[in-house]
Image (cartoon, rainbow, N blue to C red; front, top):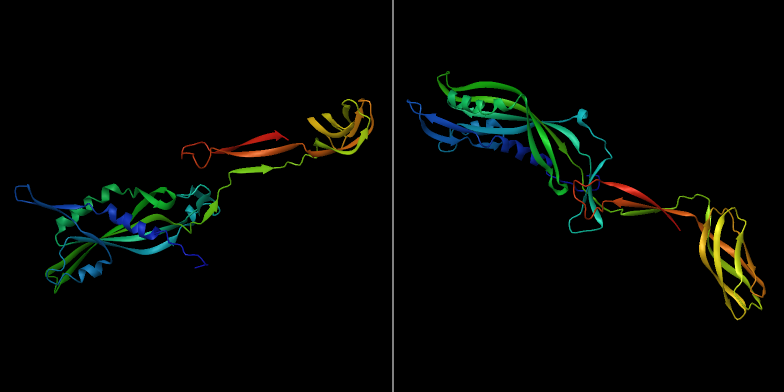
Length: 319
């Protein structure tokens, strides 16, 4: 739907979670002297109670006691809604340049009916007393909610109601089954698709301060008759501190090596050549932005641990 396939097994995991909570319930049959004659686990399966009750009259098909459960309703829970645009992120397995992401899940309440089917009243009370003390009325279970992202969450299972029903064969002579019905609400979540995206590891930003530094000098005239290196001066332009050294070739100025770029220039300063025995040399200053901002993400997302202090450090570097 909507052009993408997405299946995270969220509903299936709720079913597995619920069944796991109740899959270790036992019944003990006692002798007259109170000692244990035998003990056995009560089987549990997903499906409506009617499906199993219909098999009672079929020989060697099914016996009691038995438990079954099924999801009977899904309801969106607006109270637990989280910010829609927030994402969970994890470095993709086998890659150093991609992240696997998923948006915050959608909260849903799953109504689940647990049917306890027994033939004897004592069997039913044994089962109930192994369940009811843990629900007050909520019982928390930790679930690996989205294994691909490593997301674990405590899932509340809330007991809403308990009811009992006797079913008989014929004129209320032979009990067919005693059914205890427990209705629960499981506070779960449903996740969307988990697309991949590239990792942003460093961001370079020009802050645009409108101030400049001298990056170089373009020689517009080399002049003549220079027998030594002339002194280079920079004046005007609103800034200060720029210095450079002239390079003389064949009695003419060939280039200027910038030894200090200066700071605070709003326009190109005037370049002047003094001394050296010659005349006629001229040049034009070339400016560059005064500062550059490097944002370094720390710690490195490729080597960090889950308990590292994530954040970023802004380093302002003069060019």
